[in-house]
Each structure stands twice: as C-alpha cells, then as structure tokens.
Length: 215
Figure (spheres, one colour):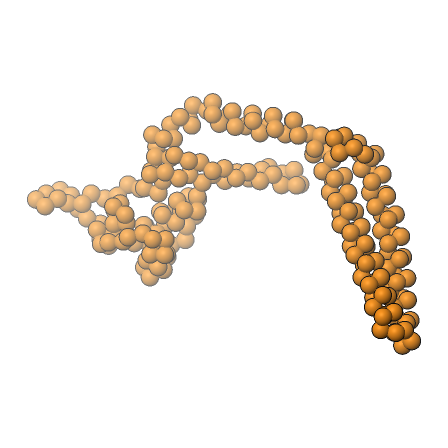
C-alpha cells in the first residue's frame, strides 16, 4: 500500500497474514539449509561446507527479519484503536490543562511560595479510581514555622533545644530539618517521613548538599 495512505484494520491484518506466511516459508528454508549442512559435515569439502554454512546464515537472517516484521504488524494492530482516538485524546488533555489554568486557587500558588507543580496521574487498568500525586517546588516548600530565637538583649524570646539552621532556615531539631526537607524533595507530606536518628539525618542532609549549623 502507498506510504501516504492511512491503513484500515483489514489492511493491517492482511499485512500480518502475509508476514506470517513469509515466516513459514523462510523457516522451512532455514531448516532445509541446516539439515543439508549437518548431512554434509563428514563428506563435503571445506569450500562446500562454507557455501552450505553461508546458506544457513542467510536463511536464519531471513527468519529473524520476518519475526521483526511480524512484531511490527502486531504493534500496528494493537495501536490502531488508540491512533483513531488521537483527536479525542488530545482534546481531553487540553481540557485538563485548561481547567488548571482557570482554577482560581492556582493563582495563589506563587504567593504561597510554590513556583512549580508536577502532577503524576496513574489510571489503573482495572478501571479503579486513579491515583494522583503532586510534587511542589519553590522557595516556600519545606519551610515550617519555627520557634523565636532570643535577641541579644531580649528576655521574652527562647531558642529550641537542639535547634539547627539549614541554608538560613531554623528548625527545632536536626531530625525536624531532615523530615521537612526530605518531604519537600519527595513531594509527600512531612508526616509520611519516618523519623531518623541524628547520624542518619546529618548524613542525608550532607549528601544533599545542605549546610547545617547549630542555631
């Protein structure tokens, strides 16, 4: 069929049938060539064996080529239905993007310190409810309310015991810094991060390139 024609399902199935028939013939040719080579091992000259071996190699290559073309035909058939729905699929994606753009809440994200949201949506094949994950990034992500640090002459402020400063932000403890920053990196709530001992927390923070100092 011409390359610029859009094939029908019937044409794709015809192509597959032709490739399978070609594979059958090429498989028979390969078996025949291999059988001839095996039979001539003890009687043929070196030149004859080389010729027979070449025929076996060529036949095996033809079989492999047929298998590749059959796989290509199968992929075309499997993707036929999805290809027919390309317009509908693009429209659905565009509609979802527009919904996010029109959402009033989305306009608040920059004010909340969120400059980027990456969504991952997985649709189970069994038709169950899809799962949605969102990973935010920005200067406000991972920042939590911390205790006041007393000034040089103040008496009302206080400093949390074991508090640390990471990249200019104070946290009540080394573990609190680890949990907050790890949650921000993984894009999950802080409460989903398991607490770590001081050594493990410091090792992770250092590995991520954070500068940690006693607050």
